[in-house]
Image (cartoon, rainbow, N blue to C red; front, side, top):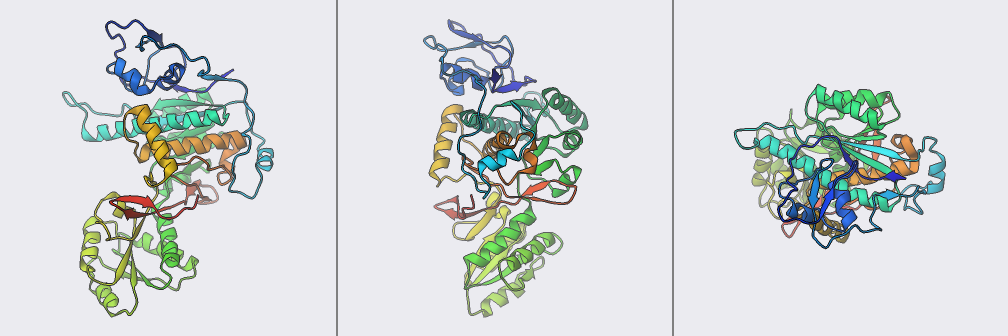
Length: 458
């Protein structure tokens, strides 16, 4: 019998479970997590936390957790499952059938291990509180953990026999070396994280010598992929985004003149990527304007044009971008903005027609709303992009392990994408001896004060 669950090797939050007047306890045994315990009793994590002040996300071996008096274990809600069979009939975006894919995977195992390397206790304490950066890191780790827990149940429902391990990994070489030891102990098939370059280098050395795969779950330069070809980056790079977005603009505005605006020296690579993407969709040479000093040339060009002009705003500097939109106010122009236009909040309603975003939790999508409602019920909090990206990574790569075993890294574009709520995956190899970047791009539009998905590539 195989246990599907989160196993914690480090306890970083204290939990007070010895509430007075409690007459119904659960004693934590080896391998149990707060999530698996909540499922065992048919409770939400929030309900258990309410009865155990100070309990956040982790539990200790032998710890007593107070439960509602009338609650008993649900026999059908166990964390052990019988030996599993392949996923019945998953939807595939590839022309190759599921059955054919499975036969291509010689490295299949009875059970798999997914290791999550997250920075839970990488913090500095003042006299009585965490500093601002530490609070952000801890929140990222907690929300990623929660997203992974949401994916865990979905994997179990798909009969994916994968055990998920959670390790605390900070921003140091030493932390990376300790993470390698833990990954070796559990024979991790997929490793998600760390979130920092120094420990990533240590983990990359380890996966390079094994048939394991390393996933980078946050935005990071493609240079990190030079460490080994046994790794992939789930977040699309800036160049990939602009390559796609320029081509998208060519298709979206067929009767308009499309030009680019950028700041020379800061946005050169984005400009080159946009030129290539524009040509890939049948456009002529893309005319670009350097607005690092002023917008006079671009302004005059638009004013003299007899057709609507679409401006690809490739500026990453907030001051330059704001100056651009201000300078062109009142002209017959549409804007296509980069990711900074979404994240910085510098774009008002109607100022930009569309923008790009690597990750989007779409509140206009019914499936997303169902997932969001389930998340709120489970954790009494709102999901963020880190919750969403870890959910999709664990679900996607976990499904890949079921289909292709430890060989999943060689079949990244052949995995069923059903159930993803924020990401799509379209990988390309960045070099003969380097890893894979995800080139899937979400194009979004501001509607009724919030961003919604405009394109649908899934």
